[in-house]
Amino acid sequence: MSGTTSIGANGAVMVPTKRPRDTAIRQQRMKSWQPILDPYWVILAFAAIGVIFIPVGVFTDRMSSNIVELIEKYDSYDDPNLKCGITKANENKSCTIDFLVPRDMTPPVLVYYKIDNFYQNHNRYRDSRDDGQLLGAISQSTFASEDCNPLNKLGNITLNPCGLIANTLFNDVIKLKESVIFGKFESPLVLREDGIAWQSDIDFKFLQPDGFKSERCEACNDDACSCEGSDWSCEEPFEDDEGDCHLFFYPYDETTQYLHETYPMVTNPIEGVTNEHFIVWMRVAALPGFRKLYGWIDQPIMAGTVLSFEVIANWDVKSFRGSKSLIVSETSIFGGKNFFLGKLFFYVGVICISLAILFGLKHKLRPRKLADKAYLRYKSD
Image (cartoon, rainbow, N blue to C red; front, top):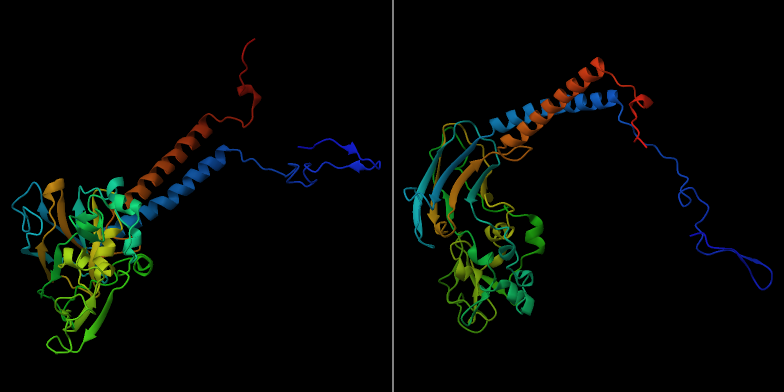
């Protein structure tokens, strides 16, 4: 607002304080430019988009076609004859899934599990967690307790971590067996299970409970490697895959069920919630059909190799009428195999070229002069 000038007691002119300063931007005197959709520019724009999009679509589709992706469904609610079909949770059923590699596969070769018809993005499911607890907090607020219900306690036993997401963890175990390898390798193929989670999640979102501690022993049969006493909560030392033994302590272990006790087939007492399979699962999927990374092979695989996986099925899919699949796939700059992306670019390009031709013919056969007043129509009085 500009305000009104006034005369002060000493006769001086009082300048209004709310008047905008006399600048181009404050007084709205900036020069402006309004583009007009000239027919020639519209036609050229559609043609340029089409010329760019069609080759990109062909290139992307060809790249996706060259990616080797092997997939096999191993459990489903409507097919009891599948290799690893189970009728109840934690059945511990073992089966073998073999893949014949049709073409050479370049590393990294990614191994996924795929789940269909499971709504991780449901509001109630997604919010059923205590992020403070996942960061090590022992105490729990009233709001966090309500979010985690009904899986916050089992009787007098507190679940740590609590909530629906953490306590429906995918607990099938997938191992790469000694495969029939075509060609010569310096070492056998190894399925690595590290580096599968986002580094930011590992660094900032998951910590063992406050008060947790562990200590490595020389040997499990050593008298000094004992869980006796109040310093440790373990019943016996934990021996890892490399043969090292560890003593550990969890606070309030008598009244709390920790993740390694709920899912001993997935994580161990030393890793706990910092296990990468658990961290991958806790990042919820947006769609009901999704795949999550289980591991990867950092070695080239030659055509003719038979990849043999041992799957121990524990995760039930019949309760939600779903299915589980195992996927082995290469990757590219656009991710895994994706026929939709290339076709999308191609069809958008075709549509743009078609529009450019259509508008060009229209402008050639029945041109219309830009801003011609003859085309104006006025309402009659």
